[in-house]
Length: 108
Image (tube, rainbow, N blue to C red):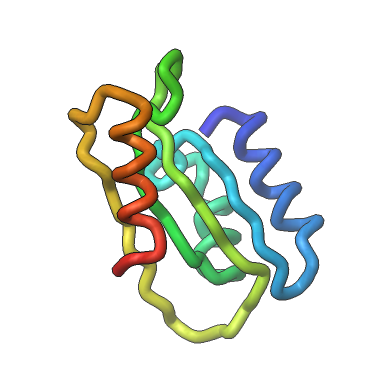
């Protein structure tokens, strides 16, 4: 993840009140880069992820694939499963993408 996006996500979590909600549309590559291990630990082990959805190019001019991340500042110290949902990457129009996102979020 570029430094700015990583910083914004970390800062958002830091400023978030206990049991508060935080939502971001961010590049998805922080999930697998070696440089973002600390960020993944912060997101997945020190907070509770409510939604994680790969939405690819949600903006027409986007040059990176993106995901929706919704989390709450809650550390239960329990092992938790996080499911990565994905919409069809071949959907081209914004209305199709928004409908697909709406249908994925909140459904397991």
